[in-house]
Length: 207
Image 1 (spheres, rainbow, N blue to C red):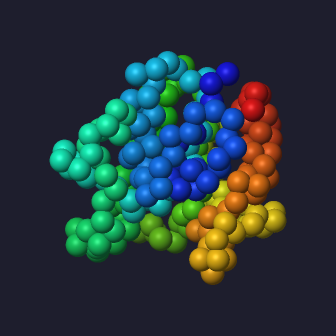
Image 2 (image 1 turned 135 degrees about the vertical axis):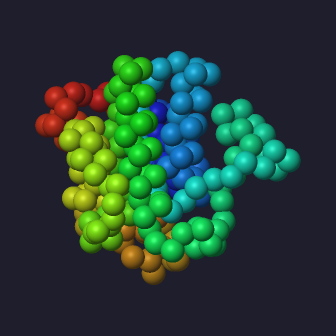
């Protein structure tokens, strides 16, 4: 069984992940989707795809002269400051994150690829999108059992609450939901995912 993990530095920190790990520090949700599709086209359909959602405010830009490698193409992580220049609220980032999750889920299902998506670091709270129009699409995510309820679970927070060990001195000073944890901390997350897959999806993953 080919397992594929694709996230940001939080996925990259899971060095013992038993499969293909496309995670890249600084990566965005858009990158996770784009490179998962590209890897699948270049190689084969993985039996299971795991997407730990990174910060929704991240995005990427294309600079041909700076990078042009297989799968990654010419894209590089964009500057956070640019977000503040083009949007005065979190509406844009949240709305696009929801839309991308919905569309990517549909593509995976059309390809017959099993998958699991969860929040790794956002610690989502509906108070931040209260009153926004056009967010009704969130219902499609909430009705999808392959997306662990975004407002009930955060991977980093869960690892912290279950004995996760911060990876660096800098991480020790961060809030639990955005800390990086050592590879030895990931079995507790793996156990949670395994139980969710069994109890909710009635499936088994051969880790």
